[in-house]
Length: 153
Image 1 (tube, helix red, strand yellow):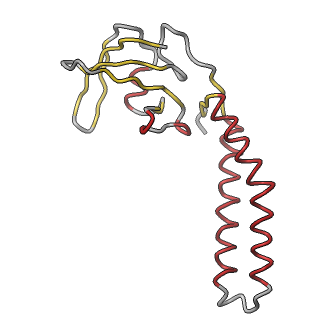
Image 2 (cartoon, rainbow, N blue to C red):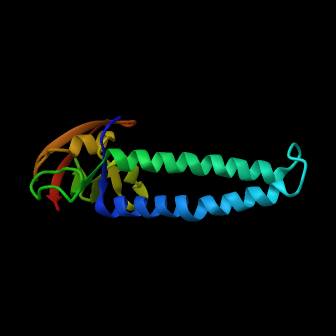
Image 3 (tube, rainbow, N blue to C red):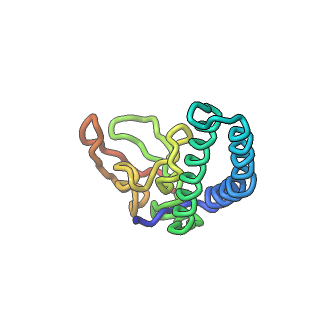
C-alpha cells in the first residue's frame, strides 16, 4: 500500500473519528440490533436488516481509518522554497493573469472545494519539487496545461 500523507490536523481528526466510532457508535448500533431483535421475526424485520447494514458500514469505516493511520506519514509542511506535501502553492496558467492557490495534501485529505489537491493527482504531481518561477506542464482532460509557480508558502 502506498504511503498516505496527512497533515497533523487531519491525522487528529481521523483519530477522533475512530475513537467515536469504536466507543460511541458501536454501542449505539448494538442497542439498535438488540431492539430490532426484540421485535421478533428476523427474516422480515427491516429494522434488524438496517442495523446489520449500519454495523457492516461502521466496521468497514473503522478498518479504513485504522489502515490510513497505520500507513500515514504526518507532514508538518514543506520547505518554503520547494513545493511539497503541506505546501501552499500559488500558480498561474500560461496566458492568464488570474492565479490560484492550492494546498498540496495526501489523497485522504484532498478537497477541491477548499483547494486542497492530492499530491497523487496529475496537477499535484506536476507541482512537487518545483520552485518559484518554475514552469511546468501536465496532462488534463482538456489537453496539456502549462503553469508557472508564483509563490510557495
